[in-house]
Image (tube, rainbow, N blue to C red; front, side, top):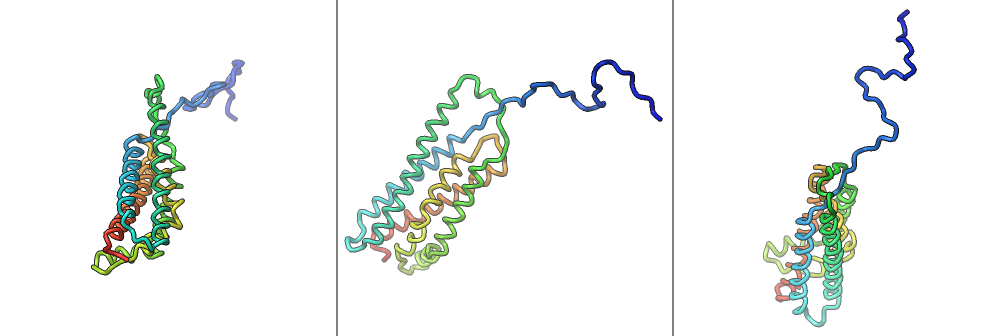
Length: 211
């Protein structure tokens, strides 16, 4: 039977285990958001909105459905621009807090990025399955596409489309979790591709090259 160590009046700590200090707390960390990604996404929303307006100015007068779809997509782009504009302002203000830049960066996963990729996947699936992908194929093949089929499904899925861009841009964290940073960029990329394609659809329809 092994002998017990003599009692010293203090609890012994096993070798190799750090003692627990009463009231100890984890060191503070900070979450940063990429101003470049936020500004870039907002800038694309602005350019896409302006070009879509230019294309819609030449839409036929007897095309109420096409005009409705175009208006809905413009609202989605405007929502992205306004919300990201506010978030950009918040991030610049946070960067100006004295001493905050010296705080270690938090590397936990970004829930915003995970939600963003799901929303972007919903929007992309709706667009592709609703005829958008087929209309792009028509355009590339020289067949006259239809604006209504190219944008109708995305008009319906406009909310997840816009939120995918917003959450993705906000979910990208410099120095943060690498996996969710990639996921955030993919979500923003999917939104950007759809924004470019719907803008092209508006310009083509406005130029009289599609039905």
